[in-house]
Image (cartoon, rainbow, N blue to C red; front, side, top):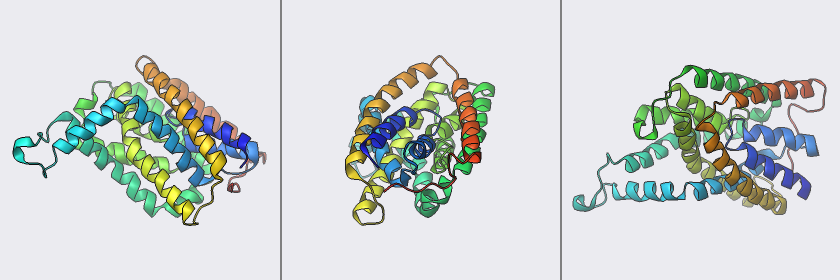
Length: 284
C-alpha cells in the first residue's frame, strides 16, 4: 500500500463508518479500484480505531457519565456508597457491555472467514442490497416512539446481534443496528446514538487485537500509510458524526437505501465485466 492509497482509504473510512452504507465494503471496493488490492481485514480494523476515537470526542461527556455511574453501581462498593442498578446510565453501561458480546464472540469464532471468505464481493453485493431494503422498510413502516431511556435488556441483546451481522462486509455496523432500532420502534436519533456507543467496545477490541496480531507476525500492515489513514479517518469521521446526527433528526434514511442499491448494482456490473475480482489480493 502506498501513501496515496492510504489517504484515499482513510477518507473513505471516515466518510462511511457512521453512515448505514458499510465502511468495510467501501474499503474493499475502493481499495481494489485504486490499487488492485484488498486492503485487508487488519487495515480495516486498525483504521476503525480512528473513527471510534472520533466517537470518544463527540460523546465524551456521555461516555464519562455512563462509565462513572456504572462503576458507582457495581456490587463491590459498600451499600451506602453504591448507586442503584436501576440508574439509567448504570443500566446503559451494562447494556453496552452485554450488547457487545455477540460481535466479540462471533468475531473470534469466525475470524478466518472474516479475513477471507466473507470478503467475497458477491457476498458484499447481496448484503448491500438486502440490508438496504430492510433499512428502507423498517424506517418507513415502523413507529418512532422509543428513546434510549426506554431501552430494555431484550432490545439491547437484539441490537448486539444486529451489530454482529456487520462482520460481513456490506451489512454495515451502523446500518444493522439502526435497522434493528427502527424495527423496535426507536427514533432515528436514538437508534443512531446507541449504534455509535455500542460500536466502541467492539471496534477498539478488534483494532487492538489486530495490532497485537501484526506484532506477533500473523498479519502484515505497512505502518506509515496505515497511521496516516487512521488519522484521516478520525478527522473525517468526527465531521461525519456531527452532520449525520443533525440529518437523522429531521430526514429519513431513504437516500442511503437508494445509495446501497445503486452501489450493489454498480459493483455487480464491475464484477461481471472483470473490473473487480470477487476475491482480491490482500495488500501487504
